[in-house]
Every structure is written in C-alpha cells, then in structure tokens.
Image (cartoon, rainbow, N blue to C red; front, side, top):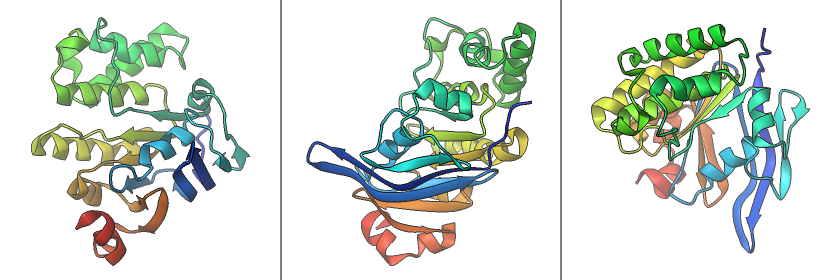
Length: 240
C-alpha cells in the first residue's frame, strides 16, 4: 500500500531570479486532509512556490520537507513518485489522446498492472462526472471539462498532496461552484492534502480550511478564511 505522508512544508525558502527576489524566507505547511489556499496578487510568488515544492525550481536558500525528510531540489518525476502531484495553469492534456487515455497515462506510472490502472481511471472519471466523455478526444473538450480532466489525471497517481494551480481560471460561476464541491470532497475520498492557488477569492474562502497569503514574495498572513477576509494588510495588498 502506498505511503500516506502527513505534512508537506517549506522552511525559509528564498528564490532569486537574477537581481529579482521572487520568494523571501517563505515558510508554509499543509497537512494530511487539509485544504490550504495560497493567494496573493499577480507576481506574489505563488506559482514559484509551487514550483519549488514540486521540483521545477530549486530555491536559492531554504528547504522543502515531506514529513521529516528533506526533498529540496529533487527532480519533478521523483517528487511525483514520493506522492506530490500537481496541475498547471495551462492544463497540458495530450490533445491527440482520449480523455481516458490521458488519465491512464498517469495511472500506469504508479500502477503497472494495466487492469488496476484502468479501474482507477474509470473510478476517477465516474466520480468527476466524466464517464460519458471517456472516449472523446481531449482536443474537443470545453475549457471547464479540460480542467476537470487535469485534476483527474493528477489524482490518478494517488498522491499524498495535490497542488492545484488556478483550476478555476476561465470558468464561469456555476463551473467554479461545482469545482469547489469537488475539491472539498477530495481529501476525504482520496486521502490527500491540497494546496489551492486561485484568484477567485469567494471560491477560496468557501473551499479552504486555512489560507496563506503572499505579497511581493513574502508571507503577509496565514489564518482561517474569516480572519484572512478581515485582515487589514491582506485587504490592502490584495482583496481591496
């Protein structure tokens, strides 16, 4: 049975791009079963932090921990095998493959038994309401469905932690609400923690257990949704 890790964290992570500081001494943690929102204005460092957590960016200083094990600088495919999966702002589905084949491509990397991988794919597609479009080419999907399939593909690897980078971008209010319901159900059904990057503030406030706020690469607040919504510094920097 796959190991279920209990905490994913950064400690004093710093990232410089030339003379520009993208992240400055950022310490973040998300625990098993928790949904952590990561918000802030454009350029705050949110995606850079997720890139550090998933091995796409090596920090200039600081460390990443999975439970007590330091995994700083581990290559992305090895991070995924450790139990950390992600989506991207651009969904990056294989356009020439069907919906089922896209999710299966992820499942077989963790379930070499083809029948088990197929079962996981169908369970995921049925759960997100996409069973009827399983054999449809990914290039034919509307935007909202494409994002759902991206989440299903990330879940196909049975992660301990799922990192979602703006999953509601470009969706309408009804699609965002349905997506929020799915995200809230993921920890109990799949046994993982979630980091949610999202600019849809009402969705974040209604979906997350706790919220971490970045501004210009620095942490300005961490707390419960109600506390974040009323925090003067957060309102000045981001909420307005």
